[in-house]
Image (cartoon, rainbow, N blue to C red; front, top):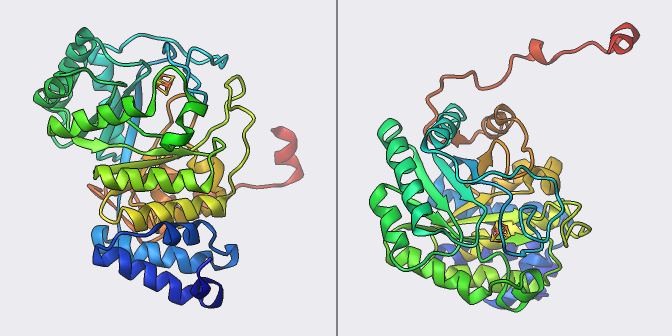
Amino acid sequence: MDQTLSANPTHRALELAEKSLSGEELSRADAADILAWPDEHILTLMQAAFKVRHHYFGKRVRLNYLVNIQSGICAEDCGYCSQSSVSDVPVEKYKLMTPEEVENAAEKAVANKAARLCMVASMRGPSDKDVGAVAEAVRRVKDRFPELELCACLGMLKDGQAATLNEAGVDAYNHNLNTSERHYGEVCSTHGFSDRLDTVRKVREAGLSSCSGALFGMGETREDIVDVAFRLRELGVDSIPVNFLIPFKGTPLGDKEELTPVYCLKILALFRLANPAAELRIAGGRELHLRSLQPLGLYAANSIFVGDYLTSEGQPGLQDREMIRDMGFEIVGDDQSEPASVPLADRVSLSTREVRAAK
Ligand code: SF4
């Protein structure tokens, strides 16, 4: 640990923020300090992350809405995934949604004030027919909701498929690295880290905005966390979703329980300081792992998902929007059509014996 950190965390935090803002890359020693930050000084670290976040994004928070456009039928064996071939989780199974169904999901995204709809399909990678079907859905949604950004997440792409999606109106493509190159083989055996890199590169070459992030709580070391943060920096991705493992019983990683809320904050601060200008999104596992510290996560991240995750429930969208407004942040594209918060009187419920008995 750097001596300044143990002697004066406030000074060290400021130093890291200034380094990040100046465009200088964080070193491995800097990253190690962030992950080893004393818990009781977490606010100094989040203040440094906020300085950088505020420089690039002000008080803005972007909302994203997920739709699982093909569910539960993937041949891959990713150990964290409830939809893999080695998962016993009783998830819904269905093939690619029709364009009408995707359009319905877009309606829900708009109702939830999301700036982006993320269309995720459980598959190793799409056939050209799948890409054609997604392209048709995208054209329909864009006709109706031209302002809504569309992101596709269809697994590993073959040559030419990213260009087809781009021509149809897809704005971004998500393909997460998930963990470090070293650790990758421990969470998946049916494809490798280099396959993941290859798709991220194809996405960028086709001119799509690249979205690629990571997943923590899978037995990775601090070194692995730093590796994946720095790899995403090297790739220059535009958007970084940070997931925290939802340990589904029935998956190979279903018994992992390694994260604490404050450690999740340190990971978010590392990703912000290492990737200052990237959209940083708190993704799956936000409610489960950050718990009561969720609002603090927004001092590093400028983006979250609203609604449900792929196979698990998120907290109600109104609660997310209230959290953002309560912090004095602004939702991107908010048309102010709903009150900033639920009236206090509507929150009051009686706790008399009679009411309890009637329940
Ligand atoms: S490729 Fe995607 S859908 Fe398939 S098992 Fe891995 S994470 Fe799950």
